[in-house]
Every structure is written in structure tokens, then in C-alpha cells.
Length: 531
Image (cartoon, rainbow, N blue to C red; front, side, top):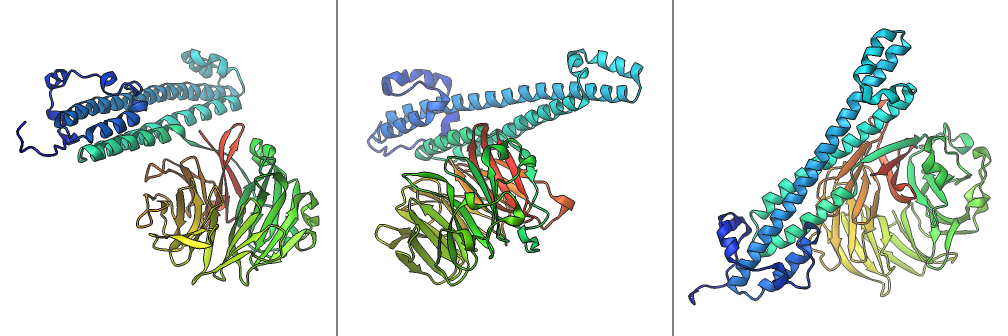
């Protein structure tokens, strides 16, 4: 090369002009360049590409070219594996479709048997000899098998479609990226594919209908405001805005939600904003709960004082062992870390108070109503959202603001931590945003696909994913690596009520897998399983 050539930056879109002979002429092996790296498999590509990027920083033209050629191979390998996964999904879907066809025929034959059409049914059963054993069983069992096969096929269709969408989007992006950006895109693509494969489908398990009336026969609204699982997953608590608290056995609720009966009833004389189990670092307490009402009060209660009869449910005002009035107006949200409780209110105040103490240890006055709050996993920070479209982060150790997050066009209705450095905010602008501490100018990612224009629809985060409710009575699952939903499920509505919306969502781990519990403004509780 002559001395005029400067800083070559080959582009991935130029890979197509490098023929096979040129590739062979660069006699270089991965083991020679990166002896400490794993084999050239798609699941290891992000590590390999990162190493190649470091190697290319020497600005040596031959190094750039060799790295470019290797990345071309890596992309081809990744594409091949992805296409193979899609083909495998298609094959499994075809098999499931064949099974459905056979089961359909056997169910139809059984129905004809019940109608007395023995001769005609006998011929159909012979035509489907591969399901002869199934045809001899009760019709309801076959319907269950058919439903299971249909669910399986729908999972494969959903996975195949999402993989194709992400593959197509990745191909568009990488063709217009330079060498440095292409390695980042490749890494993101692999993470996205992994998140898609992690969960294939929502399966709706059942619904626990709201009681016909609230304790005391009150006629107020029965919207579910919060769902909480005790630290050792012994109990599940559901709070209603009318003041009713229902505590279920968690295992019984998950195993048979439609027949689940509360172990304890409690009630508050005032509308309840939120209720959650008290959890400390040193002790996992399954019986103590903290409750906030809409008049600014906080209660500490032992759930075992509750009754199994809703009409005899004790009042929190009478049975609580701790009660303190923190705010002059309604409490919108609170969170707990170890022994400290953070509350936010319509009175524009944020309060930090130690459990069982009578006065807050810190207060922060803002200019507009504060709507939500959340402690970071290490308890050092509290994030909170407000009605002026802003989320902020308070450093608890020094009692000062460290971050102001501007991006939502309407009120910030929910805030949760994905990790010690990543924060998720949801607004009634129908957008979920992910932020990284130290990068306040713009969010890391934005996620759209649900409806939240006038209602608070809940937010729950877990393992790089987050669930939100929607005003069209859907539950939507996002991955932090994908801007569009990776899963969604429509919940059943009685009488086709168009005003029903999801008011809260909660992700839970269970021995049978991952589940999402969703409450709506009609007081119904829905259980979905993630596959």
C-alpha cells in the first residue's frame, strides 16, 4: 500500500464483493488470531466479534480486512443457524397441524357415535387409524389433546414469525452499518434471538372472578390495585381500591385459580392504594404486610388476624400494629427496601420512613404530584415519576438528586429497576423506556405496542424482560433488546365490556415455571403461564 491510504474502514455492505478465492487467499485461522476464544459457533459470536474489534484498533489495513472476512463467516454461520431454527419450527408446526387434523377427525367420529351414526363413524375412525386409541377415550379428553396440540402449533408459529421479523430487521440494519457498528448489531441480534427463544407463548390458565360484593356490601369500585407474593412464596395478596384485601395460599392459587378461596380477608375503611408483603434483608416474613390508603396513611398488619369469612373481616384501623399518617393527600405508590419504606403522594411529597417509626427520616418536596417510586436493588437509589412527564433518581445515601430523565410526553405512571444501573419507566403516553444511570439525555431503548393513554396499567420487570397491562385488556411482554412486543395475550371480558382494562401485572416464579398475574378494573384476577 502507498503512503496516501489512511484509516481504512471496510463496510459490511461490501462483503458481497469479496469472492471465495479472496477468502481462501487469506490463510488465517481463528485459533491463530484468537487462541483464547471459544469455537466459532453462533452462540459465541458476540465474544469473538468483540475481540476482533479490539484487534482492529491497530488501524492496520490487513488486520481490518482479515477481521472483515472472519465476520462475514460469522454472520453466515449465525444466519444459517437462525434459518435452521426457523425450519425446525416449521417442521414441528407441520407435525402439530397433522396431529390436529387427526384429532379433529377422531372428535367428529366420536360425536357421530353419540348421535347414533355408528356405521358412518366407523369408516372415519378406520381412516384415522393412527389415533384409534384416542378415539376410544371420552370426547372431552380428545378435546383437551386437540387444544394442547393447537397451543403447541401456535407457539411455533409465533416463534417462527418473530425470528423472521428480527432476522429481516437485523439484515436491513447491518447492510448500512460500518465495521464498528456491525459488531454491536451482531451482538444485539444474538441477544434478541435468545430472548425470543426464551419465551414462546402466553397460555391463559384461568380467571378468579371478583366477589359478588365487597365486605360490608359496599357498592364502590372493585378495581385490583396491586398483587403481591410473600417473600417465601407462601401467600398471594390482592388489594382492591374499595379497601378489600384477599390473601390466598400461593400454591393453591396457581394450581387451581378458578377454585381458589382466600385464607384471610382484611379490609380498610378507606380506599387502598397499594399493599405488599414486608421483606427485609435479614428476615423473610410471610405474615407481615404494609398497606397504604388514599388518605395518606400507612399501616403495618399481621395477616393472620384476618378471617376466612369476608363479612367478618377486621378493619385495618382496628387490627394494625403500626399506623402513621405521612401525607395530606392520597398515596399513589410505595416501595420497601430492608427496613425503609418510600412513599410518594399527590401532595408532591416523597417520604422515607423506617418501619414502625412515627416520623419520616427524610422528605423531599417537588413541584407536581408524585405518582410512582422504586428502590434500586442495592437500596442506594430511589427512582420516582411525576405528573410533569419526568422521572428522577434520588441518591438515598447523600439525600440528593443524581439524575433527571426526560422523554415521556405524559405522566410517568410506573418505574422499576432492571438492575443496579438500568431503569424502566412507563408512562400514559403508551411508551416504556429503558434508561442507564449516567446517560440522562436519551433512553437506551423505547418500546411500543400497548395502550396506556388515561389509565395506570401496571409494570413488572424480570431478567431483561418487562410486562405491562393495556387499556384494551391485554398483557404485553417486552424484551429489553426488542422495541416491539415479543408476546401478548388478550384476557377474557364478561359481556364484551369495552371499558375493561388491565390495572396491575405481577411476574412470579413458580415450581411449574414463570407466571404472570394480572388484575383488572372489574376486580377479576387472571393467571397466565409463560412458555
